[in-house]
Length: 70
Image (cartoon, rainbow, N blue to C red; front, side):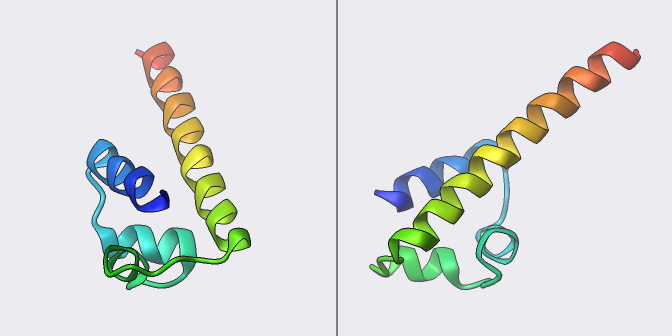
């Protein structure tokens, strides 16, 4: 289920649900709606999964870059 992945992502990145919704779906209520039982279309779900993967990759690359600078 998408909501489990999203909740894990939010905890891992200490991100507010509304911020995630704005960044990933252009909808600050997106996570709340998922929590209330919303089931997004396949295309939306894939976009959200892609956003999380890209965010993780960027965060990992940034942490490596910071490690090399110091």
